[in-house]
Amino acid sequence: MPTLKEQGKNKVISRLLDAAAGVIKRSGVKIKAIGAGCPGPLDSKKGEILSPPNLPDWRGVRLKKIIERRFRIPAVVENDANCAGLGEAMSGAGRGSSSMVLLTLGTGIGSAIVLDGKLWTGKGGFASELGHVSIDYNGLKCGCGNRGCLEMYASATAVVRRRKAAGKMTAEDVYKAAEKGDKISRRIVDETAVYLGAAIANIINALDPETIVLAGGMSKAGKKFFYKVEKAAKERALKEASKGVRIVPAELGEDAGIIGAAWRAKNS
Ligand SMILES: [Zn+2]
Figure 1 (tube, rainbow, N blue to C red):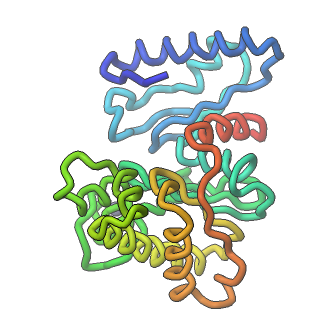
Figure 2 (figure 1 turned 135 degrees about the vertical axis):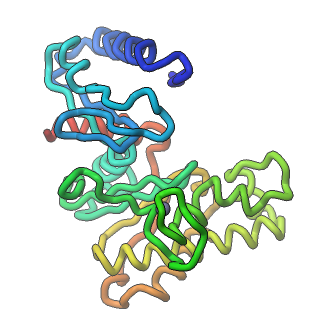
């Protein structure tokens, strides 16, 4: 169901809880824990939302406590990009890999690092902000304060911005048009593949992962796009680390975050 954030946090939370109650009732199984994915940054240990840019009135909401009070079972609150990553790692495109990195190309770039079946969240829970890996230290200024961040070049927002002559095209439209032979779209998609490849080379050199999963509108871009990303990444990464790494489209779509939140609760 849509968030309808304009209704304010109290209404959204109560609809969320009612929806969960309905699902639990219909499922007919005994639920042991609840996992919730939320926009970050958040404190997963306390289950508190900190300062999500798109949900300003959610600052300081202790969602874990709210859920536990209503359902009287343990709850876990995790960053939504991390949930999507865990979902793909356990049940989707990263299934069977010992290490997986997810990049979701949306409004910004969400990402997750899963090592040996566990999320890598860092010392304070703020790890895997790979959208802010810089691919040009003198490049475009990003909202985070850095320059040349990947999300300024390869997010859906950035793809649409570069295809500005096209009016109301979405990133998905640009990828589809490129596939059908539109020259300007083709050029933008090819550039995006190189930007992504440059960032992925950094990720490969840092983590030597088995699988890199790409999610978002570009899953419509087809095999050629993935081949180009892989080529650009392997040209730049250290040979030994890039050998055998798989760069593949996500499999779970919108469900990735829901499935991953459940895994997160199960393994907590
Ligand atoms: Zn940034």
